[in-house]
Length: 386
Image (cartoon, rainbow, N blue to C red; front, top):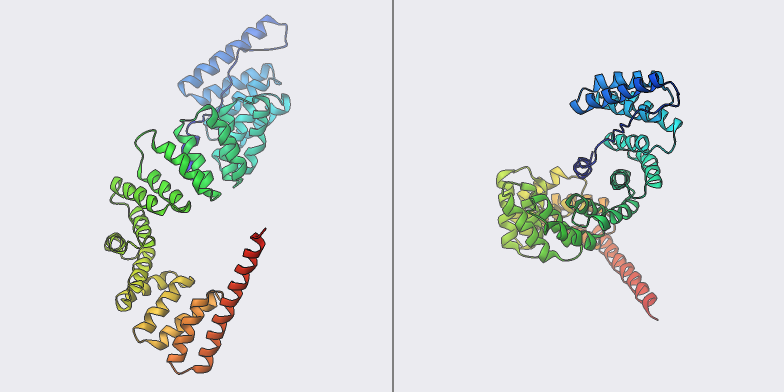
């Protein structure tokens, strides 16, 4: 179960509908017996004795087998004993007896959410809301089910309705942020995360997520500040420190990026992402020799990634290892044939190695890709003209 769903789900409890005994029998003795079973079951539930509660609900159903409320409560008792299949059957039977009984639909839907059956949870939870439009617990559970089913636009609508009632609810704001991030609506994610951060002391995860949202929204300098706060809160987190180093690298703040990435690799030499970013940093600084061991490590970890093979190929060529460099650049263009610079670097290396015909082919491919890009950009520009 995704972490955010697990956290928000703790705010929603299974609904146990315990009501006074009801029966269509005119027999006062039977009515009193039924009421006794209801009260006894409720006492057992309050003390956590779910086996005894189950027995009382079954005795009540022996008197009134078509009592949908008793079937709903029996399902709760069974569920609390981890007898999931029997609980589902009890709630479904309650719905057959009374399709408008909210508790049965809610318990059924929430049980599906708790067990990651998100698509199955949607229909019963929507049914609850159709019966009780102001049932925020059901709407929360529905939002979680929609997130789990990756129906993010629908989930965002449900969370928006919930936030109108509870605009300062931390769990809802975090859920809204996750939904916006999944849809790459980074500016909106940054807004709700800022609201969440203003509520109380925030943890490393929230500051890092805020940094990701800001970076996605094109506010990278602010993103680096957010990640700096995340690292200060948890200096031992390599993942967060890598994120900060990456943002520094992205902002061309190379000295700071080198410090953070080097610290990540000091703690964990196998961190291939940090190795690649640090190696690329050295390559950008024209220190190909220093970049090599880091890029070798990254390419070994990510052999099917264009970026790792391309950067390693460039470094090898620049350090005089033409044969291996050409091999790596060949792999890079096979992984992604659409990158003009890869063909250009490969063409130059082939020419340098005396393979002029192959080199000319790669340089011609570079020219064609550039021309195709210019033509496409020109077409987009003309479409914008009035």
